[in-house]
Length: 265
Image 1 (tube, rainbow, N blue to C red):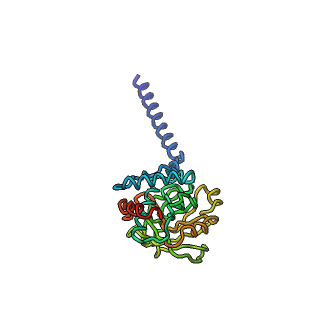
Image 2 (cartoon, rainbow, N blue to C red):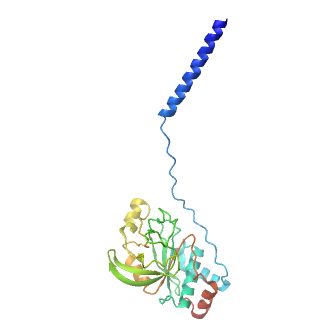
Image 3 (tube, one colour):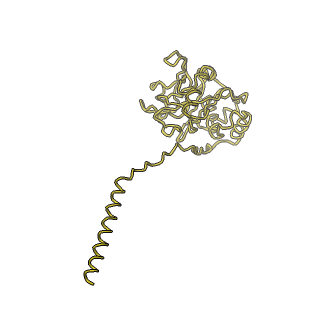
C-alpha cells in the first residue's frame, strides 16, 4: 500500500513538472503580438465661441457663413468667426491693407481634406478652397503640435500679414509676417511662406491618402498656388487656426466697431 502511494505521488510530480516545462517552452516559442496600429483620430478639437463678442457681429458672421454656400460647408462656424474677428480688428489697427479678402485654414482638420478657404467677404463668396500642408514637426495626418521655435519644422498658429512675392526654389512664393507675438512672429526668420509643393498635389494625396510635410510652411497644391497667392495679395490677412490658438486680435468689440464703420471692406 505504501509502495502504491509513493508511485502515485511520483507520477503526479512528474506530470506537473512536464506541464511546467511545456508551458515554459510554449511561452518561449510563441511570437510576441505587436500592439495594434492606432490611426490618427479624426475627432476634431471643439472650438469655443469667442467671449465678449457683440451679438450684431456674431449674427453677421452667421449670415456670411450661410451666404458662402456649399463650398464652405466644412468650414466650422467658430473658425470662420475667428477669421472674421481677427480680420476686422487688424483692419481697424491698420495692420493689413488689402481689404475684403481673408484666407482661413483650419489646421485641426486632417491634411486629406481641403482645409484652406480664401474668402471675398463683401461679396460673400469662396474664391478658392484648397488643400494645405502642415509642418512635419506638427504631426502626421493631423497637426497636433504647433511651434514658433526656429528649426522646429512645426506649423505656427495665428494671424499673418501676407507680404511680397519672390521666385524661390518652389517657384512663385509669398512671404508671411506673423502678427501674434510669441506664437508666430518668427515666420520671416523661419522662411515660412506660401509656396507650391509636390507633396501637396492631388497625385500625392491619391497615392498616400494624405499630404506630405513642409518645414512649417502652409504649402499649396501646384495647380492652385498661383491663383491663391494672387488672390490673397500683399498686405492681406491669413489665419492658421488650430487647438490652442491665442491672439490679441480676437477682439470682438474692436471688430464690431470696424464692421459698423466700414463693413467687410
